[in-house]
Length: 226
Image 1 (spheres, one colour):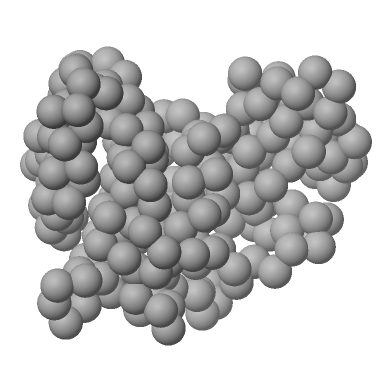
Image 2: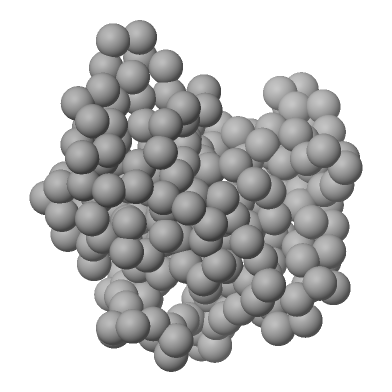
């Protein structure tokens, strides 16, 4: 479901909140030169992804807004924006097997100090790979996450050390299978790195192993991770 209205201005946002249940999903840094279309206008730096669900029909979808527009939504929703730290694909993220060289601190270009994805509890390895995979697909594609994928992100944020089920890996594999160029996840990331050399390394070994096991069990036909 696509959002069929602008959310520019306070009254437009209030009208949306009257019609839809709206919740924030992620806060993401655009790659240099990338542009996304948000409901408040064109986005060139950082953006928030929101899920919306029609209060009457239950139909759901996702949309993007820029930094300031996102904060206006947070104010209306009375949600603490610091609960949604910045995912910056130009920095490495925590590696459960190492010393966290990829752990982002702050975004030097931010207008104010931004919360980071660093948490006191280390992300479980599969959780980290799933979290990164969904965000990188969002970065490479144009659509906003909603439904199952929004729920997965929210679960991992709230339960970083509790391993997600194999069914979650299956959903991520299915998501990647929808790439319009039929690329596996590692190819999507390689193409991003070709276009944006400062993109850091991401590992998906655990995710690949889980999907391979699902294939062996007859639950999945193709591994779209690599």
